Amino acid sequence: MSNQRAAAIERARSYLNDGQFLKYLGQRVSVKTQSSVAGSLPDLNYYLDQTIAPDFRLIGFDTQTFANEAADGGPFLVASRIEGEDLPTIFCYGHGDVVPGMEGAWSEGRDPWTVTIEGDRIYGRGTADNKGQHTINMTALEAVLAERGELGFNMKFLVETSEETGSPGLREFCQAKKDLLAADVLIASDGPRVAVDTPTMVLGVRGAMEFSLVADLRQEDHHSGNWGGILVDPSVLLSYALSTIISREGRILIPEWLPKSVPDYVKDTLVGCPFDPGESADMPDHEWGEPGLSIAERLYAWNSFSVLAMEAGEPTNPQNAIPKRAALHCGLRFIVGTETDKVLPALRAHLDKHGFDMIKIEAPADSPAYQASRHDPNLPWVKWAGRSIKATMGRAPQILPNAAGSLPNDIFCDVLDMPTLWVPHSYNSCGQHAPDEHLLMPLVEEGLAMMTGIFWDAGELGGDFEGKLAAIG
Ligand SMILES: [Zn+2]
Image (cartoon, rainbow, N blue to C red):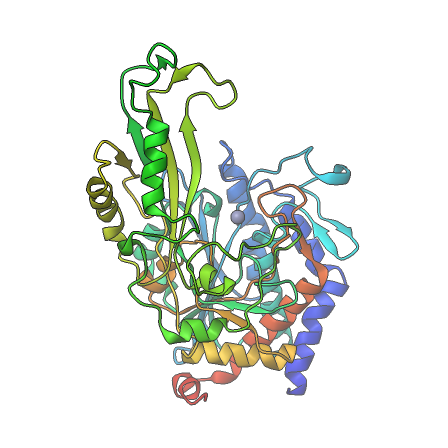
């Protein structure tokens, strides 16, 4: 490692140790950017205008903010620093909004809007999801600039403020601002590592779609004595239908719901991939899901079907009645290679074939809510970044061709047309979307080091970067 590279990483670490990182994070956490709470728009604007834009301008970025064309969406900020036309351009993404603070539900009386340090933990709403993660990346940029005087590459950094409500308007914004946002690669941070002690690089996401199976059989409920034995029970009907869709062992039985094929590189990349339950006492069920697949393959290299909720009668106050209606609210998580336009027609044909033509399928108009995306770990940018992380950490990161969860990542790889490479700085038990959300100090330090290393190395690529990347063996 060059002395200067090491010095830049040391400098990034010093920003954590001297309190600067925590000062910035504290300012950002104190803004109640709860995008799902009505009336939060002033806070979302304040976040971008007062806690992000000035800090980018301090390190020589131009910043622009944009209102969201979607009525239910918050503003966007684009910070950019262009150093040379022939240099590589990196795109980074973060979201400034958070889920509700859940005041009063945090342990030890912690205030979600104040950064509190206890041992290795940095508590506060948004520390993990996502204010802390983009603050790490901004801090790493600052360290490289302080050490080198320039980045050595071009940077475009997008911060949105509606991620927690499904990123309304993000796709349209990226479509409209394609030129402004054009870049060679996305390198950003969100979500957890695969395991707390395993640096991770995630290249895509599983997609997600939801739909309901509804047996809506008659006008009203009927007395289970006076009518019992002479009326079809909608819950029983749905249970039998369900048993033809997924096996007793959790295997999906509708072929059109499965990926057409899974490339070898997906399985190769997942060999030895750890599973980390976080602080949960639960462990995966070995007899559940597609037979013959490892836990990592079932999570990252296959599709999964879940019944998210069941509806019939009054669960907390059963009546002596045969409900008129029952419903199963279902979710399918899917990988690239799944023909999503065939999922619901295949379900219809399947139900009809099994004599369940009275069961209706209801799905939102914009289904699937999330498309799947994935990249090949052999892509030059991925190999390059893996090598950079190895140089910093002394070990190669665990690569996931896609995460198990879902994000609108296809906006970046399909609309903006760039490979996507996520380096998460959090872990499974960070409490995101729950009380006691926190970051871990050692992961912040490692995150600062890894990102500073990546940004440092990007600055070494120079004008013939494509050739240099292609030459990486
Ligand atoms: Zn979130």
